[in-house]
Length: 287
Image (cartoon, rainbow, N blue to C red):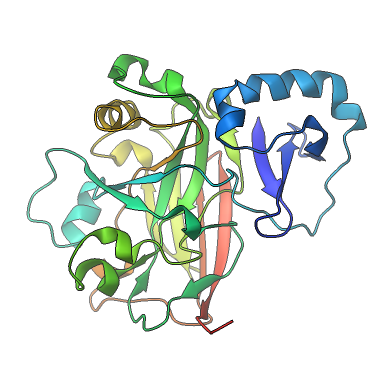
């Protein structure tokens, strides 16, 4: 299934896109796509509900706003430098021997077609197309061989990053990762059964119509089953949590000279089977 959320920011409703492209409002199911939904086998229950109620569920007409495909999770866990060429373009002299882990604030979540706000005092806002993994059930100390049993599905994520905040201000990377609108997620959560092998998906990103990231998830240094198992050794992953698995080469930081977003720039990105996103960059202003 393809799950999506639609409507005004922080007032989104749950939706489902059927195999024929029809989009249904499933608000009558009575649940958002949140921790409780995933923890109680919500995907299977929603499928069963649709068997009986799809014909009477209202269609979602064109022109709606997509929200984040997952309601605000307990955490967004990020993997850094998980593609070799990106690690080297970022200045690494050797590849990580274990995954680099950092967090991104959940308040950064937004819709896949929302504008991205260049933060106040930012001069180095950058882009990163990434495959996001959505956890389907409580995950603690799982073995790599069983790790995919704990995955609900996958989504497109743009891990926006302010490089000066991230790398020049001391402390942890989270400062450069967590500004508002820095985590567009979606348009869909595509369930694992529909995606198949998520470690063999093409992913790409274009800036102002020019493709600058073009890779495949098979190029990850640490692949999805390992990452889920590895993280579960250090923290409990809760249903609905998001693991975002790193970006391939082609970020602004790695260009010579570096290139960063300015107001009016348009970023488009996508992942095979999961859909695409588009954001226009705008300058921060006081509300």
